[in-house]
Image 1: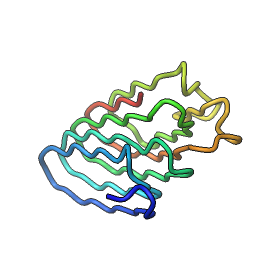
Image 2: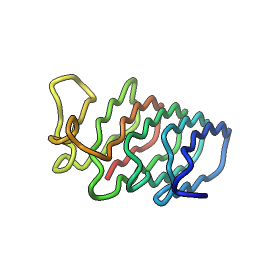
Image 3: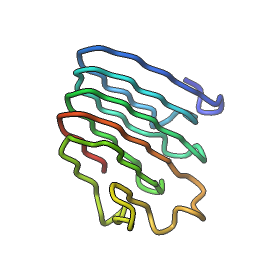
Length: 124
């Protein structure tokens, strides 16, 4: 993948494992719809704005946000256990919302929307 070409990805997967490393890409939009999966996603390190939408049934989800990338996280209808690095992404007043203190002014940032059933979610 060329780091200069904007990239939008949509993935639908019923079961299995996914290990997606977009660290050096120009990913601007990712949409994941899964059933029972173990998913690892590494977001871009220097792309500007990345939008991430995840709808998962069961399983595990790990999202790694590179150092230097701010994030706003909205976890809707999460029945899964949710672990967020609250040092980097403090809890907001709205339930299920987390946001970097420097999000609005950040050059590189990710907006993450999550819906997940039973399982575990880790965002670091």
